[in-house]
Structures are given as structure tokens and as C-alpha cells.
Length: 320
Image 1 (tube, rainbow, N blue to C red):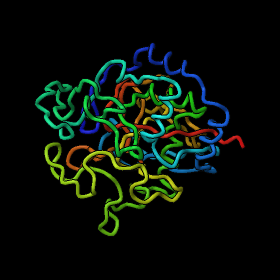
Image 2: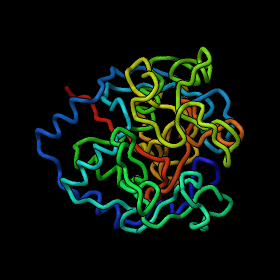
Image 3: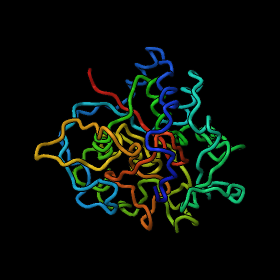
């Protein structure tokens, strides 16, 4: 895989040991699970146009649009924070893929001395393999999340997000649920607020400014992640569904199958695929190279891969 927003792949299905570890996590107490569910935003579902008319990246399969019908569901207003993931890790003792393997990918400009970490995926010199990098040490050994409790947790693989959901009694949103919620009720728009990237000349999301990948002017106020409630929420009350961090969703990634004339009802994605889907773009997306920061944008990575620009948000079926 290539791109500013992505890192090297390890294998499309990942290590089955990580899946087993995620599913072995004990569940939270019933009152905790109830509290976590009650915090989710309830959405009525309904019909919407998923995808875009024409994609800049045909390999992303986000075009053409298709009609989808969703049942009611719930979804979190924000990506999972460092504070929330820390509580989960304390209560369960769970160790993420990056912690087990002893390293993760960090963007080079976030390192004090990138030359100390010369190993990069082929063609992606801006990603550096950093020993000790993980969710609680985002820039590697000697770093921590002090002052970043309200920032999205990063360096989490898909399996790690699954483990959190297993503990919380929740789930990753389907890709269709994620996009419906991300749009905030607006139809056929590029962003949750409309079609202008900077409405009224103001920054509305956390992406890259400057010249990627070596000069970030940070005009939006952030060089790395922003707090999960930075910028205004969309019409449904969700924050940062464009930019900040890529968010894992439930679906496998594969070319779209031919579809009939009728709306898809609660689509769950393909039965087989190359990795798992990520949505929303990140603080590294830039129009010069990887403008995957729209509500229809998507990419993929392997479920046991982690980077410093990937997190997740949670969802649940609404059976109330």
C-alpha cells in the first residue's frame, strides 16, 4: 500500500493469535457497559447516498454512489480517547499489537531525531519504525500521553479496537453506519459541513498544511493529533469525522460487487477482502498527494498494523 496516510502491510488477515487475544478480553461490569452504551448518539437510520460520483482514487472503490438503507443504530460522538483506552487497559491488562511486537510506525517530523530511526516501509520514507512506540508512548521510548488524555488513542491495530469493543460490549461501526453518521444529515456533500474545505475561510478539521511530507505549517493549530472535540461537530453531534485520525470500521476491504437497482439494506461489507477498511483521513492528508479527507474517503490496512495516525470510534445496534 502507498500513500501519506498509510503504512506497510503485514498480511491481509493478520496473526490469528491477535484475534484470539482480542476475543479473550474479559467483559466490563454490566454497569460500565450500560454507561458506555448510554453515551452513544442514537440515530434513526434511513436512506442515504453512500460514496461519491467520481473518485480521485479509483482503487478506493468509493464511487459511484449507491443507495443504502440503514436500521437505527448508535455511535460515539468522538474517537476513543487516550483516557478511555487507558481505563480499558488498566482493567483488563490487555497489551496492544504494537506493545507485543515492540514497535510501531511514527511520522518522521514528530520525532526529535528522525535519523535515529532509519527504517521505513518501501517508498514511504516519512514513516519510521520506532522501537517502543505504542498507544501510551506515541513517539517511542521516553514519550508519553501527558496532556493528551482527550486526544484520540493511536497506534491501535484493528485487533486492538476489536478488543476494546469486546470489553465494552460494543462494536466497530459498519462502513455504511460510519459514513451515514459522518455526513451529519447532509446529502452528497464532501464534508460534514458542506463542500468547502475551509468554510468562511476557517479551518474545520485537522489536516496537513504546507508541503508534504517535509514542511507542516500547522495553520489549523495542530502538527499531530487534535483533541477529539476540536472543531465543531456535525449535524448529528459527531466530531472529527474528517481529518485527525483514520478510524477503523468493521468491514473487510474488497472491490465492490455488482449491485441491483434496489437499495442495500444494512450492508456489512464483503465476506473476504484484503485488510480492513479505515475511514475519515488524518492529520497527514494533503491535497497534493492524499486528499482522502472527505466523508466518502476510504483506505485499508491489515488488522495487525498500527500507525501514529489511526484510531477508532464505537457503535451499537439500537434495540431499545
